[in-house]
Image (cartoon, rainbow over all chains, first blue to last red; front, side):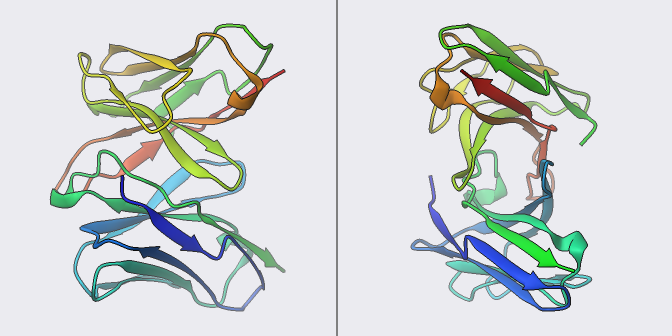
Length: 113
Length: 114
């Protein structure tokens, strides 16, 4: 399956600081999904990016898909304690049928109140 | 997601024992998956199934088997558990829709093999 490198592995921030996690691939991706897993919880779908250079926003979260479709990022503005968790990227297969996702190893975000 | 349930939620077993983890869903999705999660390793796919008659190996299927008893049920078995199968196991479902196929995860089963 497609391999992605997700960095950083861990990130600790003070509440109110910004946070960014990156997902990098050596091959061109057809699309990419992002999931969030709260501590003790299960992964929950956040968003899917499909188009080159696409930017989507969900309140304080901004998701970007690189122009070459080889990388993606998730940026959180002014983190809150509710943002704590592990964020996973998952590249999808061509044609949009993501039945066999390969998840990145995730970035664990902790927020100091 | 409450539509995907897993039993048991926690299990402690001994090396060599056979155990079964069960997954049920009320979402009506044809596609179901089993993942394991280990600290620092993310989610790795064990097996997946597109319908009742379809079973496919994932990247780490050795030591595991599955059964798709019905559209709504997908069970994972460890025929002879070993300590390195200690992990958090997730079941998930999906259905393609409008060019997207979101995966919906169950709450997970935490397994400890002594």
